[in-house]
Image 1 (cartoon, helix red, strand yellow):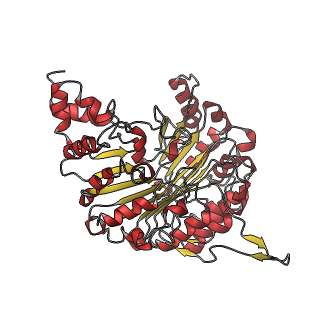
Image 2: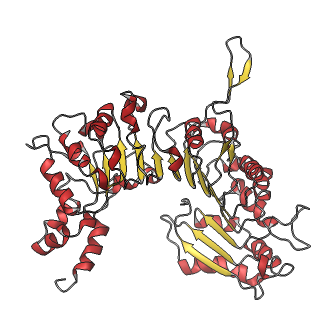
Length: 501
């Protein structure tokens, strides 16, 4: 080990300093799902002296020399009062000062809990130290922001020194009332208006747009949590016309119809206008939780206008009998004249997909004539086979195919990805029918309109499966049908329930 160059140690150190916040953390992260864990929650804690860079630098003299002269180990961190020893004399200022000095001149990304830092006179000096480096702030994650925090931001005169800031993430715990966080002097919440590089807002809880003021027209990426009602997301989208990427998690949707005092029903759409996002290229919508209120979600979806959309990812994880609103997405694509190139339909097992209607799926796919890449989950039961039964048969464009007079579905499709939640789902897909559909697209239309690649992603979980047998079970029936067509058959073992950007 002594012969290893310092560069190797630096690479290894970077892999070891990040952590899962649900493991050995007292910050209350145990209830978080994987998709809820943000980047900042994995950063090392400044006051966790037995972990992260502190632990590395205490192993031996050489490691300490390497670590303290490697600023990339120190420029991302968490600042939480729960990690502080209440008996410390200086309130953690020595540790933070040392940490910041080791970060050199690199930009800083930090996760802070203002309710524990800024609201405590014993620890409030810590934020003053951070404010001295405002010109280096790149990413900020706020967990339970308070009026005291915004007051200190204002007093620290950081507004004119945020030239490096690119990303703001706002969290709130269950006991924190987000509206109260913005109850102080309105000028306090204008501190980020002059951040010229600010492009990304991550809203992990209720963020009222009437509170925090941002340069909305600059933002190109928005991520909204399921803890925020859909109408609040729509209001924020209306403020951000230049978005290029948007990821939403939806759990609750208010009813668009209310009853007036005299008993007369009246339409009361909280956001009664279409929302034009002319530059949006990637949209991911994940429906979560158990709420049957998702039956109102199509009303919200239909307000979107996304003419530049190229990638649409629909993740269905809610455990109710409300199916995903595929037809509503199709209406949006047609109304927007979108030329969608990539579509992912990812479903959690038993997540409302047993109630899918073939007509809804077809409405969406007919609105995507320019689609090149299609990915969807294979249902593991007879009741959840609607996706594969509807799509696969209609990919066959031969005379004897199952088009039912619909014409070629997704006529220029090049890549098909099929995700299996378990090996047990493989028999639920007729591989011979799939192969015939692939072959039919080579014969009459030529390679310009052919499916060139088919990827099978199988989630094994705890099931012991011989991968070679699994590969043969998939590849064999397909190759019996294909007669020399140049199609890449790719079989992967991986997570079949998660889709990223």
